[in-house]
Image 1 (cartoon, rainbow, N blue to C red):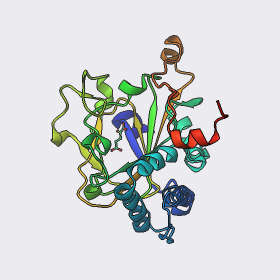
Image 2: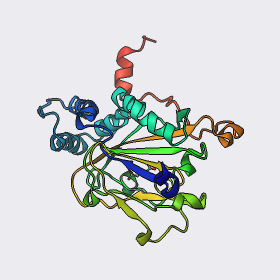
Image 3: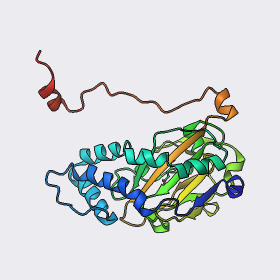
Length: 262
Ligand SMILES: O=C(O)CCC(=O)C(=O)O
């Protein structure tokens, strides 16, 4: 807690055991595997095999890849992790007695090989408050689902940077980046093992590290606002995230097969 207030972050080692994360990985595996006409990858519970099926889908059916990664965001197993008692209890120690999720939980798969744009796997220096626009004490929880060392592109943060308020940003391909970011020597790599959890202030400056391996960097990322924060209440609980319904028919052929005759 002292570390968090002072430095803007702390890592809770081994918050979740590998077994507690297996159901998420099984779900991801099945989502991708089921898009295969002949599911041949019958080896679950092995990160290499999970990466193999995801890679196979990326190269063979990009639409299925996009659909799979999108639907992974709505997994019940992921949602359950985001409301796990262990996370809520730590948030309470950080002063978030009444946390509320800012965004829906996110499942991130960062891989330079399996991305068509750099902004799909790499974020520039930024502070999350700029996108969240929530409570002043909002917190991000970043949980790797695989061991993430420097080679795997560990998250890079600037300790103490949460103390200097919100920095000016400019629009970029990803979203927005800090206009005058700290130089590289201010950033430290946060190397973590699967199941560790990084808690950080949404004012902490951070960016993605470079990925030097073919392995996918899987992580779960959750964001919480504090319902009791005076600024959040005074600002009338701002929420920049919008759900938009696509009015277009996504699969016309299927649609025609089920629609009532004219
Ligand atoms: O996981 C990462 O590399 C960074 C993600 C991030 O900072 C964000 O989505 O705001």
